[in-house]
Image (cartoon, rainbow, N blue to C red; front, side, top):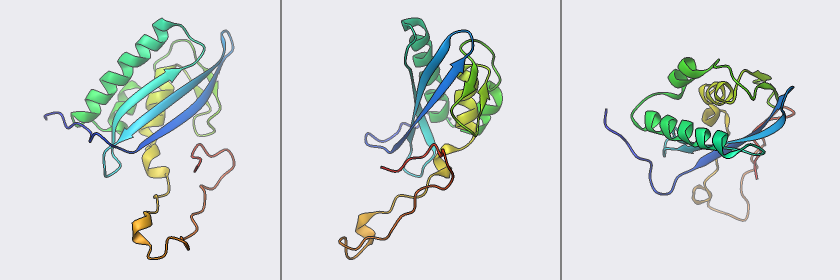
Length: 152
């Protein structure tokens, strides 16, 4: 299958998780998932605070390779099945109740990606669809305490 690039302007989801490794401390991991117009993931950017250039460089490589795989037709679920459960430091408990522990950064990223985060979000209400923008419909935030999806 040939590569299908994302449009120049696209929607994205950014997810933050804290990973607490008993031997090395706490780390913040940010996953930004770029979406095709119909909501399918097409690119991944990974950033981690409090780590050196080696780990951030490796995260860049993982993000680029994952993005290329998604743009060539691999599903997020398939990537998650193949790449989850890798084991290396940092690892440990996470701030995400859906994935309470991870055996590595890659394990967390691919398990989260396979969990279909783009389908868990409520659809965004388009203003053009409402005749009176001064009286928009009320959109309820996601349910559940500690929900990773915050509407701003």
